[in-house]
Length: 557
Image (cartoon, rainbow, N blue to C red; front, side, top):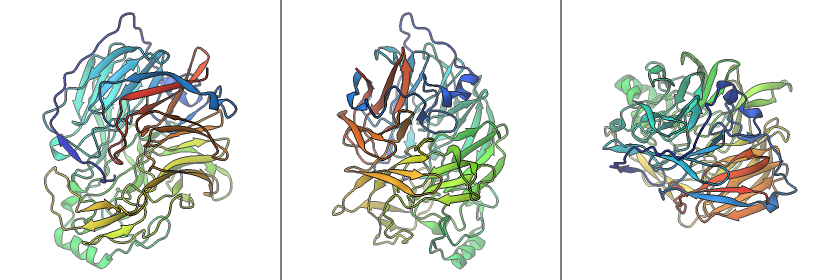
């Protein structure tokens, strides 16, 4: 993941608290509900709407004809004034939101009244990348699940917010941390890890939802074979300017045991294909980020999309976008499962991913084969320019074309919507030995003060790869997208503006100034026949957007 912005190590001490509000009752959440979430026009049951991560909400009370009338229904303010990236979960008359430093709130989604509040008791030392963020919870049965900055998985009682169990995922002293929303499915909880900037060995793990016991681990860096095939070109066919003979000589000299510190974090919630029993996710950058001499070879499975078995964690397939990445153009935006035209022109089950390269990649879901990649959504001046000691300019910058921000798709329009960043930067490289659980970049990224930093909301046809429309913004876009059956696309900006667009043509139909950076993905739900749109306005560390502490909920009058 990118390293531009603030890398923070802090000592935090909080008290674990569960506060029960009077008269509160919450029904358990069944697996059948979670499985059918893509058809649920009432609740919002997953951080990305459903197991396929489509971020598409199938209700349409709010549509292109009336969205201009959207007004705030209420604003809920947390006690944490810091970066806010939560995707609220809404079910059974309760909304669950998270904040930086691992607070969880349960609130009434119609009135905003607080039901309970949990504060995680943090360990004495916490090292984490890119701010003290948390991107949401998972729910299943009578539990709410959250990953923490000190690399734990906690289970909370859905009715009271009281701690049921917690388990240590990895050692935070080595640079591991958790900011992603976990995924709950079939009695297990899936979670990846941060830490690619600290010399960790990445993974996805499965834990038993009943007691937190580890079921399996898939390491994103294999012990053997991580050198790969020494690929010359990236997925789009462009030469990556590697010195293959030098890398092979270095590998022969140092051996291959650097796999233990090779990075490969998994930043965002994986997609789950229950038909094939597959977990499909993307893997982040290698360590050290910019200095490649310490890690010869392709550095598998960094910068890749990977599929593993849901029950065992056994490898199924992978596709690597960039081998031996020295630009921090890793894979972070969540995978989406949908259907699109295959190479034969017939509809095919696919997995799609929006990369930091500025392309949307479409893969055959069964094999991982790359079917197509889209037109570039953003300028790519200087792409594959190697970092230098003095600094080499790249147009994409370390945050890339699409950062962690989840895309959304609109199946009827055949479009995927991506939040883009246009941030020219200079890349500086320097020799760097493993520092032992401390920041390990092997260089630095620096914005160019004289050049504009901006953003773009792009719509890409998933059947053709053509860019259908784009909307340029003053600020780089981080946070994610929501699409609805009402023909709408919702997206926010760091300047506090939250907007609605016509999904078919990108026309701006509505906007509202929230007062703080809208750098979180919006959600929608329907209660009592009334549809709501909710989004967090709390700013972002990576682009230093104005901080806030609010979730703003909108509805028609």
